[in-house]
Image 1: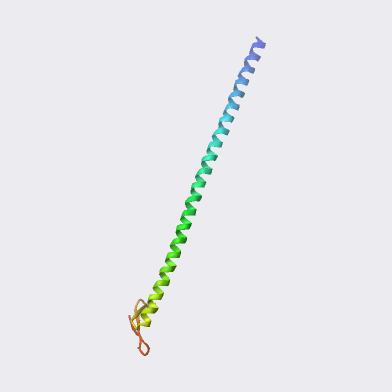
Image 2: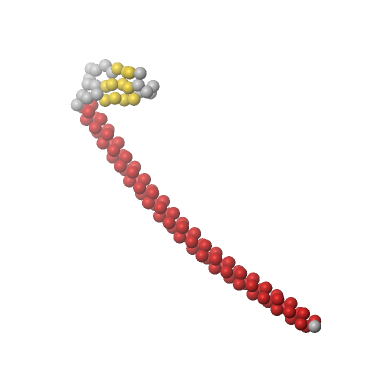
Length: 107
């Protein structure tokens, strides 16, 4: 009887060890899948960030071109003697015109 009890106990320990090793193998496989999914998700995020940065750079370039055009238009209007308005600190406007013109401030 003692031998059978000992053998049964060894059999149970072997089954538990096998189950433990099988669980460890499943965990490793699961972790590998999760790690690959995380790498793929990070690659997608990196691509999206790059696309966003490129779009932002294009927007900045367009904005700079627009500002330059507006500055050029303002200078051309000033050269033609047309009135150009500027917003004053208090929210009023100052009108400027040709040489000799006295600016008036409206508040």
